[in-house]
Image (cartoon, rainbow, N blue to C red):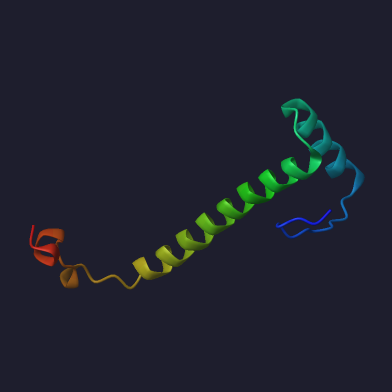
Amino acid sequence: MTTKNPRLNVVLDKPLYTTIKYLAQEEGISLSLKARDLIREALAEYEDSHWNRIASEREKTLHKKKLVSHKKLWGK
């Protein structure tokens, strides 16, 4: 059977596998779906952390006198 979605094989240590299996059973979903959901959540957290780090670095070089107000920029 072919699928539209790409596949990924992952080797897990026993405690991690057991935890994901338990969580999947608790929610009544497959291991695959639970692993996908956990990866999605981890990537969202990683992305948030990445952009927060970039924003913090940019904030260090912010010159408040050079800021433009919303009203001035958009004329509203």
